Image (cartoon, rainbow, N blue to C red; front, side, top):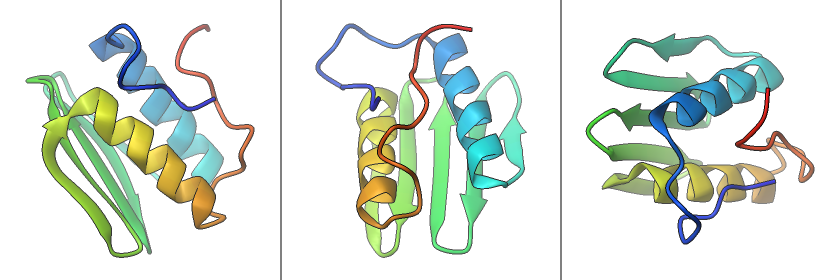
Length: 95
């Protein structure tokens, strides 16, 4: 399930967990510290910041300095459209 930017705000903790699960599913290393978390691969990049703004790129599509919720939503949607991530992927909530 793709988190929706229009839904109630996803917490920083939930974003970090989601990025960690995405990294595991994609087989890439996740960068994570108290201020920034992200991942990258050959055709994609995701960087979320505790300040609430992030960036992503998937095969030439990019968002720069946008709200984290919008960045994760678009990143997952673009990854699914590029067949880099299955449509029935990780949910943002739960353990």
